[in-house]
Image (cartoon, rainbow, N blue to C red):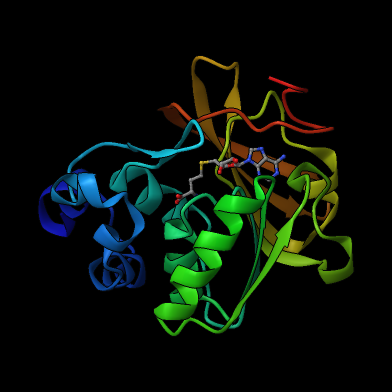
Length: 205
Ligand code: SAH
């Protein structure tokens, strides 16, 4: 997976590649799909949600420019796969999921892997986690019509936000960096995520 799907497509960030080689992705998919766990695509994981394609996880992680001392907010815990990758790369991960059952399964899985630097919350992640802010990075793993203002507000100076921005059918990966003059954004090409549902996402989608 790392060689043919990530390195071959230009993922160059060494620590991201090492984390992706380390985390056992088959533990994050339903047992019936474990043969497909390392395939080049997203997979259904129940509750109408998906685990993202390995390449997209790597692309978003690399775009976040994770550093060892960072504190990072993830919106959309899902299976916890992206959470696990982040937990290996930064000091603390704060992750929010709106569906309690998914959050609980992810929490048990990540504890089972011995990852102890993760805080979980069941809530509407479009509002962020103000008590734990500011964050060096914010990673949104569900499609949003625009960058949720609360998440941008909770970025530290120099902090990065990575999110799929667009409509329900198709989005573009947007990377924003908080500078003294505001948010500087770059676009990283198309992607497709399940919707972010909340006060600053797709309401009730
Ligand atoms: N990162 C995940 C994939 C996430 S799929 C993984 O690696 O497995 C998107 C997730 O975002 C879903 O679990 C969905 O329930 C969740 N979600 C959608 N809207 C949300 C919101 N407002 N706050 C928190 N989580 C949300």
